[in-house]
Length: 360
Image (cartoon, rainbow, N blue to C red; front, side, top):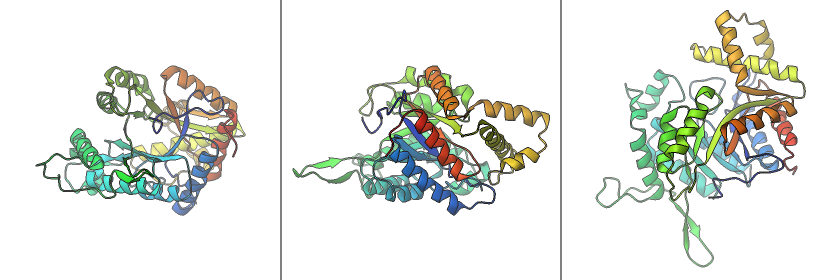
């Protein structure tokens, strides 16, 4: 249970965690972004953040997180205690056996520290999804998500029943990671989380008694309904005896409030380009200032900025506390969007300071 329910640190009302998209800014490289991720994971660990997740995206030049398992292995080698996981792996993009093998390997590398967060969206456009899945029906995997989830769970637990076509197939490394000093084997495998931005995964997570993570950072209008549905649907399980809900939150704290606003406007331009089929590197604030936003784009900027908790450290803390009160979330998972990696690092430092999180 402790692997799911984190303890609060300092004066934070709930555990704080990190969601990393490995942002690549204009004029920067993926190598630089990945080095920032290592520095950020080490900072998060030293300051008492509970977990650090990496999100799967594809065909987006400004997001270098197409292979979460590879990145997590790298982060595991540079950290010692913080929980690491996917936020998430998009299950329809992969064979369940391949995911079980990847995360079994991660669990063997960092025992007791790995989370397996699963989503049913492609994490990309339809054409890229089709290329990933080698099918002319990129929506097919999403429709089969519950069945894929059952198959993945059985591979992770190594418990296909006799007579099943996969009963003699084993995901290696498997759930047993070692033997205790008394000679007793201790089965363990990464806990499964369901991720979502609508009601489907909320209901499924509740019915299965699994922890649930909601993408408030890009679907804020659905947050309260999805969390209500999750809690109403929840049935106690071997994993949880009560609901546990995390929400992903865009948050950016800066020493200068004006800089936070400039970065948020650049983030809005980045999203406009993505949604109009023009994904690129994360633009500079200067690029956003020079861009001629049309009336509808200005409306989008205002709407987008309203869902990002940004400003000084005190302003961000106040916004996060208000969001926690409104949603009743059990954990806040913070994602920061800024052109420069050092600004993202500074944001988490400021938030940690605002909450009095420990200093290593």
